[in-house]
Length: 334
Image 1 (cartoon, rainbow, N blue to C red):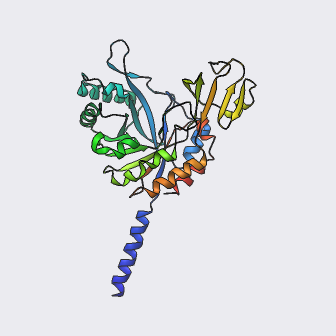
Image 2: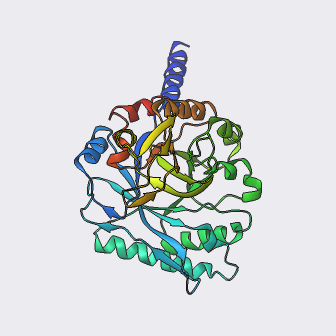
Image 3: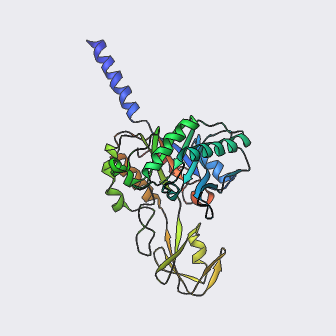
């Protein structure tokens, strides 16, 4: 009886430890030139990062021919021998909306271009990720593309998943991939209002409970980026990346009129962009508290811990807002 009790105790303890296994930390790399700065290397090293999700290229429609083509492929200026590389291909939804799309041809060409990049840079891969915000109108082409690509690539396959695709999976369907990555950002519309389009807890709460019913294994992608929404006469005229708020505060042409809102007081050029007098710049960013809140909410609404948290995206401008140890604090929430 004592031996049986001891066996049960050890089994329960082991099972409990297995249940509490923490996710690993990974990063997306979304620049067209792969070159790590010392600060980026330090972040990767300090967090024992083993996997990098590198955007290889976009697939868009050629404006002249209206045929799919690879856009802005990555160029490696240095190698990354200490990391497992997962190529990410971003496919614009309008490609999948084309009713005449040759899905098999696109799958073959996509795989071939990935192989070319790998061969040129001596990269060996085990997995490929497809990033596409498919809709009800494009889902048939998208799902057929995934099936075709899985066969021609003969690799493990993952796909990005949006919140609405989690909640309404019976309508949007589930791609035949090995796992999904929930993009827990870009939740709202980019608009000239007071809401944060990157993250809004009220919007997220409409979908979170659906996570428990989603049949595909899910990892999580969390945002560490920011941007500025450039507004003129009540209309959005562009997104401005890598806006340094402190730099704006020291610029006499920009006045902070309320939290995260700047008014242009005199027309000026900044970083190659023309700002007209009375233009507005709405800054959307993600705070440490936002990330901790996201992690807590996700942990409460997932049946099993994700195996991986992928931060979007690795860039010296982004990571300067978080101390190196902060990423482990997010992992500790799970």
